[in-house]
Image (cartoon, rainbow, N blue to C red; front, top):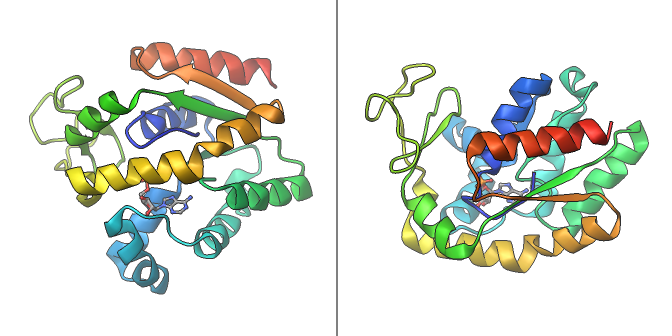
Length: 211
Ligand code: AMP
């Protein structure tokens, strides 16, 4: 899943993962978990994440390499937030060339102004990962996850300054991946301004076609 922060990648990845029963592998979630647990990786990643910068490729590549080699990825997997650089794309291509996994890149496309508004009103469930938008898609009980009842939180890097940096990083380092995958015939762009279910069914149709 490719797209700028706030485009709805995580929401769609979550839905597709449930529909296909493939694991949802979010590098952002894995890194936040490492931070919370205070692991060595978390310690190395913290400053980058808090500044809205990318964590160095070698750290993220090693984490992904380990995760995608597990048994639950044998049938397929949803990568959310990875690759984010051309170098990461080359790394994952080499891994998947080795085991025969085919790639389809789904780009969730949304204009910058809308992203900034969405990120400011984004709330997440730290327990099950479900996401809410306080304006467009609020929880039934304010501050509480509809799905699992945990208290909702706002991400530390969803502040105005860090969001601006994350968007810049996206346009500079990650958006070239659209061309990279388009040239290889592996890119499917979807209009991320549509209702969540409409986007999801467009993605599911495309996945079905490519099987
Ligand atoms: P996300 O939840 O995908 O927005 O990621 C949150 C933060 O984790 C990013 O701003 C980066 O600091 C870091 N991160 C997540 N995925 C990657 C990646 N593929 N490469 C480098 N840094 C990443």
